[in-house]
Amino acid sequence: MNVFTQKLEALTQAGLKRALPNISHEGKWIIADKRRMLNFSSNDYLGLAADQRLQREFLQKMLENEPLVNPLTSSSSRLLTGNFPIYQELEQLIANRFSREAALLFNSGYHANIGILPALADKNTLVLADKLVHASLIDGIRLAGVSFYRYQHNNLEHLTQLLTKYATQFERIIIVTESIFSMDGDIAPLAELVALKKVFSNQCQVMLYVDEAHAIGAYGEQGLGMAEVFDCIAEIDFLVGTFGKALASVGAYLVCDQLIKDYLINSMRPLIFSTALPPLNVAWTAFLFQQLPELQAKRTHLAYLSDRLKQAVQQKNDYPLQTQSCIIPFVVGENEQAVQKAKYLQQQGFYCLPIRPPTVPKGMARIRLSLTADLAEDELNQLIACL
Ligand SMILES: *Cc1c(COP(=O)(O)O)cnc(C)c1O
Image (cartoon, rainbow, N blue to C red; front, side, top):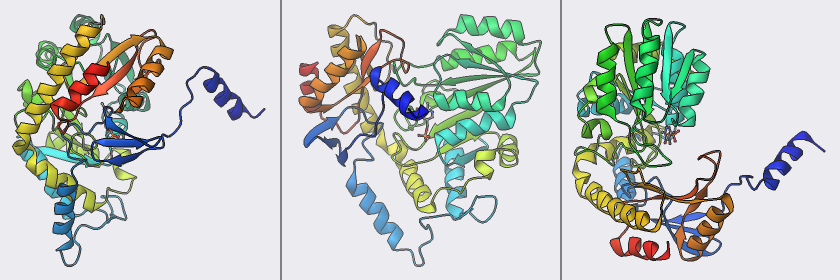
């Protein structure tokens, strides 16, 4: 038998074979197996992706341009002929909003995370990463080829031990974390991480890298994420966010000092060697980013729904919920139970997906529920009744 056939067969046997789902979309609903289901697995936290009116408004505005200033392709890397004014406009807008010197755009969060660390880290750099950081960050650390340790999830004591041990052995330590973690919906203690950075800064240069993929747009009074909530934007050396989730677009950004931006433009391979995003998409991101401060009502509703669901799940479940966000796990334990539960919920009209090891620890298979601001309260109540 062909080796790939064999490997796929083994996955099938273990119940772990993946396939692309056959689905279509209608706003906040997913259509699959001829069934219309409310999407409880979306990253569209503010409901902007499901908003057809907004997209029409934007596209009409774009069509008024003669000629079309933001075309459907950039045809090149930004370092060659692919740089369009809209890129700089969005970078300026983001830098201004965060009150920082600079912002730099990337094609995706994955590009950002596999590019930034390899560009910046050298043999005198140690990376200390939270045990649960996203795969893209792990890939970035591996590509960087530098020394690294993973500290226990959100465990400041463990991180302090590692800093104590290594601060005098390296010129630079980069602490890497997410702000909201995708499987438990819990958050990193950003203020404490900033404080730790200061404690050790007389021994070596300590820098903080925070990925706000799940937080940008959805948290903070201006929608600037957990760094805004914890009032520490200025202290985060590498503040990464993505546009593919609450911001209903595609791409990513880094908020940083101008020096770091200049250095990355000279050294970051996924930035230098890839065709830049379509200017039309960048214009759409800018159109939405512009509106972020005015979306407070959506954020408030999202927080209200999150609270409701958290309480309901906690009542039905012994697993202690750590979530402080719109991502709420319903932990059922065994893989098969999670699969059955998801199937049942789908039959009831709720598009929920089972998450199994190795994505989560063994025996902690779950339904990962994520909320969006365009859900009505009674729609959430219907799900709760079925849990
Ligand atoms: C989704 C996600 C990414 C990847 O971003 P893309 O723009 O989808 O490539 C990176 N980091 C985290 C924490 C994410 O959740």
